Image (cartoon, rainbow, N blue to C red):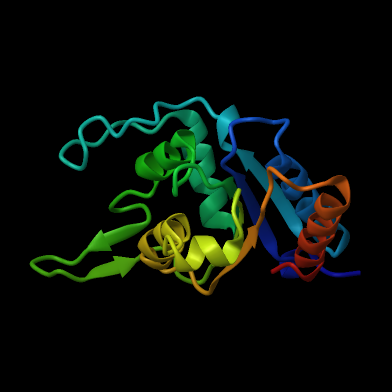
Amino acid sequence: MQNLVNKKNILIINGHPNKDSFNYALAKAYKEAAIQSGALVTELNIADLNFNPNLQYGYTSRIELEPDLLYSLEKINQADHLVWVHPVWWGGFPAIMKGFIDRLFLPGLAYKYKDNSLWWDKLLTGKTARIITTIDQPAWYYRWIYGNPSINQLKKSTLEFCGIKPVKVTAIGIIKTSDPAKRASWLNKVSKLGQKQI
C-alpha cells in the first residue's frame, strides 16, 4: 500500500458558479479517478467561498483575506498539482473566478518583485497544473481566431508567472451542441487524466 507521504496532493479549483453545469461533472470525473489511483484530492468550488471578489484598492493597500481565502491559500500551498476547471465566457473566466485570482494571487503570496528590479521571485514553484476549460466553439477556432485569451491569461500570465509549470491544457467543446454520447466521451477523457494524476 502506497505511503500517505508519497501520495500526490491534488487541488481541484472549480470556477463555474453553477453547480448544475457540465464543469461540475468534469471536476467530479477527474476527482473520482484521481482518488481511485491513490491521490489525495481536495476540491474548491469558488462559488461556495465567502469573499469579496473586488480588489478594491488594487495593489496600493492590502485587504485582509477572509477565512475562506486563507483556507484556499493553505490548500494551494499544500498542493503538488492544481486542476482548474472553468468555462470560457466572453473570452475569459467567470467574474467570481477572476475575483478569486485577483484577491489571492498577491505580491508576497504568489510572487514577489525584487527590490529595484523588473524581475520577481516565483513563490509557487515546484507545482504543476492542468486547465480543463469548456467552450462553445471548436478548440481550434478559439485558438487560431481569438488567440486562446483565457488560456493565455491563466496559464502564462498567472500560473507560470508564479512559478507553476508545466501547465497542461484540455479544451472541451462545443458544449452547447453536444449530445449525451459526446459528453460521456469527454467525461471519460477527463477521468483518464485523473487516473494518471496529470
